[in-house]
Image 1: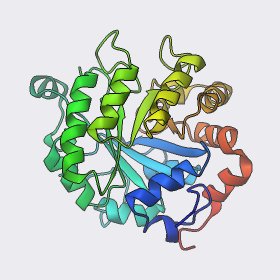
Image 2: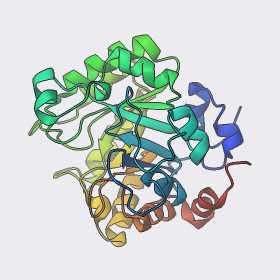
Image 3: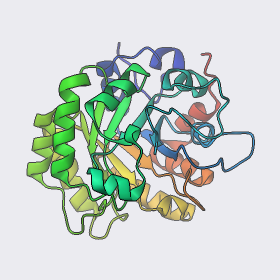
Length: 298
């Protein structure tokens, strides 16, 4: 199957294998939009979930943050949508989720539930439940190092790496001040079984310029890894002009997927108008409006 994710209707996307999905992202020429949603947060607007808002405003991919793979609760959805399989068909989008290699003492202190941790068992539950992506990463203050991430990627890749797209890395410091991504870490993530890395978008983390992001992307592409450039420092709640500026810098870096985080006025979902601003800047109105308007029954 040769198809671009940005063109494909849900009837094609829903049956894609991992290999087909990765290829469809690559063929989209750096125009895929991913939106992250905090599943435990109340909906921004009554009678519609934050997941539906993110999909409805043009995201090609939805990423679930704070999702417990054992409890499977997403605020605002009808009770019958109780699995990722059902969620995918409900919104007509590929769905990913974050799993975090947080150490037990820190997880307890921060209130992490067991189903959010980056274990092989949780990854298997997520894949069996229909997840298209697993992102091995960490939320703020989690105290997770790149070594923790590499170890988790290796274990999870060995177990389910043939069935799910594995992305790994940090979109901010994750509680470890001063730790930097490097060529060596990128190479180790590739060897550990990652299909792609996540990096901070230029202008979102102190010191991350377009040139630095471009260097990371080139190193990742040289090892055949995808790159997701992330707005993960609450700038998803900034004005649309800021989003557009970050988007162009992210595009210039060469990233394959452009991510917008989950914090608008409060944690939950980005400002809806900023999801559209990111989409239009990255891929124009044609592809953005198609994704917004296209029926999931096509």
